[in-house]
Image (cartoon, rainbow, N blue to C red; front, side):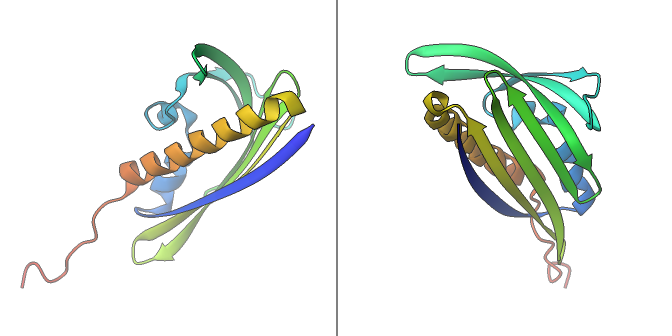
Length: 155
């Protein structure tokens, strides 16, 4: 088994509630995650607040394939969501996302992600997970970020 971690952080102009609503609702990620094709609710697993079956369409060289994995939301508050995605064979992705009010209408969204997989699958899986989350971060910023209000425009 191999493990690797990566993080990202973005600053957006929105409310913490808007950021958390988007980051914790995986149904809304369909247009944000470039690989996601379906999200289905499952009965909550042991220790999970909610559980989902998430299907992605991936590419490996010339081959396109669909894969489905279980995502358990382990903790959900108004400022953080912790998920654990699992897939055969013994592959996991743990995501700890936080939302922090940075003031002036700006919110910081930070994510710490740890990916673990058997050695033969690790390289492809880690690169793919990192690309997915980098794309997700860009699209979340585009979705949530609004221009700053120019207080001088009415003078």
